Image (tube, rainbow, N blue to C red; front, side, top):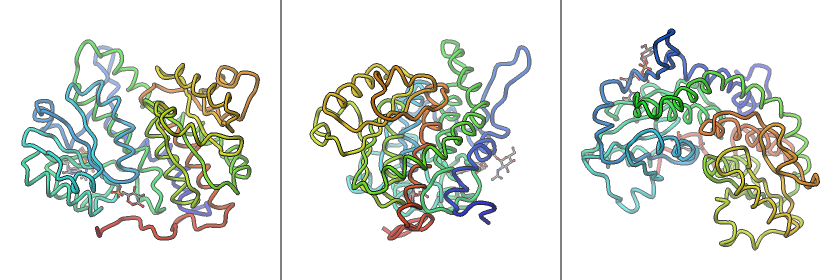
Length: 371
Ligand code: UD1
Ligand code: BG6
């Protein structure tokens, strides 16, 4: 049921304030006057000891689910206290990459049925790792075959291009980082700030959804383009990959997410007056580096569109050069949840304007159950 919406993708983008609430329901504890703020993940409570003692935590997924893990990586690195690595399921299988008994392997999948991820799970089980699932589908193959896990509870996702599952997956992995980290004194202030940020996140997502019309206007400008680049780094490298993936899979426009730190090692050669480039430059520890990327793109007459934190248009666009997308500012590790929304909206409007099938893009399936 699409309700008042024309397409499932549109509905699922707009229901993110609610889906995020459901994802967090019962799992965030604000505590009383003397009780600390904590996270409760019922499905993992008996396994945290083993997870904390593991030699490594490896996240495994495909497509958007892989991007979600990549978005959560910095906070997992920071809080978990265990080395974290990432694997695209098919690549892990192609290489028969190392998975050991001492590893915790986390399988991220909206459907819980993706063949590559499922086969990687069988492989990790054979190698004796503790296998954890993060899935949206109760009773799915991945939910059944993992030792334990977390349901993201985002509600059914119908559009082939994943939107609300992506933001819920990031939130679950941020909660996972908090839970694995436990209550180390040194990170207490940081943890509480993240928990406060999580409580307020649905409101902030509602706010960023107000950019709908602005993104539609931007889509009108970009409708006939051949290609679109998205530059990100740090917390928002994954946002660049995911934004580009949305544009390519539904709007059928070539789009590439680029790690901004790699700009000088190739992508800079593409820059001219015509190729549109979205640069994600919201306020975090990478901000000044992104400012310098923007300057260098302007110096080469690049067609730059900057995503920045609200009220910061002047510091990212000196002299009013280029377009800006201003988004609400949240705790750095949660910013990817906000920043992806305008890109989802852009991909959606580009698709409708270009006349393509939004919910079932050609050649793609919601769940790829064959290899
Ligand atoms: C569970 C209930 C929820 C209830 C809550 C009350 C289910 C599905 N969930 O939620 O309805 O409101 O208790 O405390 O009945 N699991 C895996 N692999 C996965 C995902 C999950 O093995 O990929 C396992 C978990 O380890 C857990 C079970 O499935 O044993 C349910 O997981 P989850 O729904 O995340 O647990 P709760 O949030 O505690
Ligand atoms: C397919 C979908 O390619 O599988 C994508 O079209 C999705 O949207 C990918 O990200 C992985 O799916 P899942 O269900 O394992 O998260």
